Image (cartoon, rainbow, N blue to C red; front, side, top):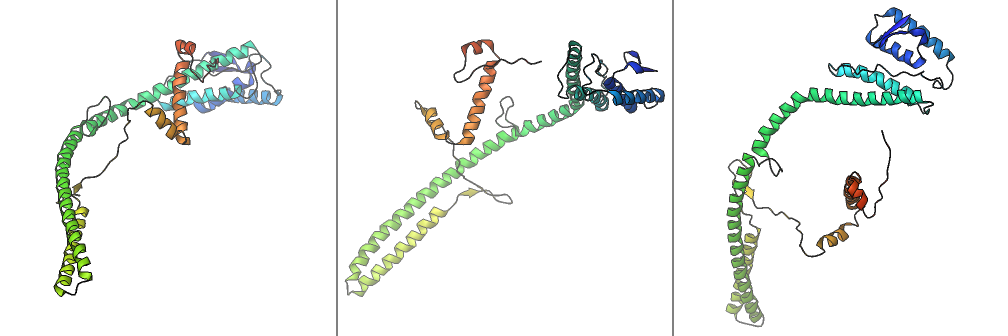
Length: 318
């Protein structure tokens, strides 16, 4: 009985165990109507399974990869079938047993390249399916950025962003004028309260030893006036300048803080000395240096020059 593979007919009774098992699983999945081949493969696999030794790789050529030609992609379903075959074969080879001979090494290398092709096929299929979605997302992003983009390197600030910033500056300047006026009124009220307090204290001291009721009453009046002026000054200090309303939340000044380098010699080293005690900072700092060192490791001239504190280790990969 012959198994009709994509490479041509193969005598089933000559097929190694894993190749026969993969072919059987593929027929069950993709061509269940090939009943006679399936039955012959089931019988052959059962016989081999009953007689196989502990290391089925000892015989050269007993492990054939799936069909060599990558599946033509007509969507994820087709790719899934092709990848499933490759993963089954990869699992058969990568079972902890080392390669025993050159023929097996050639087969594994071939499978390695087929897996690489499959990865590319997955990426191509995903890109093809994402393309219309990405184009739609780009159109949405372009529309959004046209209005609300802010602080992006390659995209101008949006129309609403600019308008919002401009009206914010206008409002902030007016609010600052109101705040300056409030501070002036606060100072004026505080000065009046302080002057009244001086008078009240002086008259109160005079009234302590006086037997003149007019002096005592005048001292009490001065104290009351000083307290009233002090309350007025406190009221002005608590005022919050704001504008707007009419159905919207009022706009008021708020305080924000920004850290700026002093620009003095050694300022960055001083800042590093301050932050290096924080483990999270050091983790991010080491990761930054590691990224730069990895970049230099890929450039021969930089490897020759070297990086203080780092060695460049050579590793062979496929």
